[in-house]
Amino acid sequence: MSLECRKLNYIYGAGLPTQVHVLKDIDLTITKGEFVGIIGHTGSGKSTLIQHLNGLLRATSGQVCFDGTDIFSDGYDRRALRGKVGMVFQYPEHQLFEADVFSDVCFGPRNLGLSDEEIKARARWAMELVGLGPEYDNRSPFELSGGQKRRVAIAGVLAMRPDYLILDEPTAGLDPGGRDDILDVLKMLHEEQGISVILVSHSMEDVANYVQRIVVVQDGRIALDGTPREVFRHYRELEEYGLSAPQVTYIAHALRERGLMVDPDVTTVEEARDAILQALRANSQQ
Image: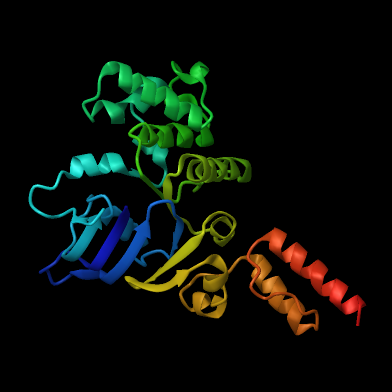
């Protein structure tokens, strides 16, 4: 199973004098089971890209294929697709609207035409996955903390049992504790439930710590695509795109310039710690 973009183009306001070519010949394949981070500066096209992946936006040209079938082909059931490829928008609490949490989480599966028993079972399963027990059922979602609201919104998408979960800046506006809680939930969903996670983020530390693969979008094109170590190796190029590498990457390079031969490709605090200790031991043995 895979999500695939083939020569994908999107022109905003096509045919008008003010038209903008937002996506340009995007070729991208994300297979089942991956945890992918998509990064790019504001206006790069990353949010437009992910809205094509479940048919919220229709490509000007090119294809988006789910499991080998073009989702824009005649007769394709894009409503059913959105149960397989779930989307959590930036500030997902704006997706909440029911009077109580349980009803909100039930909304998605109810639209799939399931039985009442199955709807409730899915809602309970999804809430438990994100750490919301029955004590939240009758609470108003609008009375919850920012992090709890995000959990409710994610649970509402999970209740549809998606194969892919796409999140656009899910930690925006949260304090560090709330941010880590949400990212830990996503890690658990990927590792324990086998859900493919596509995370759009401005935080280089977040993508370095959690994702397996990073896709860099620049001016509507895929500029870089690889593991965190491979992508952040191009930290000078990222700076030209208005991005950066994790702070530990810069620290490693600074230490090398001062003679301590630390692995320059470190991307996390743990990797940096181990690399520095290894370099210090090597120095002491010389």
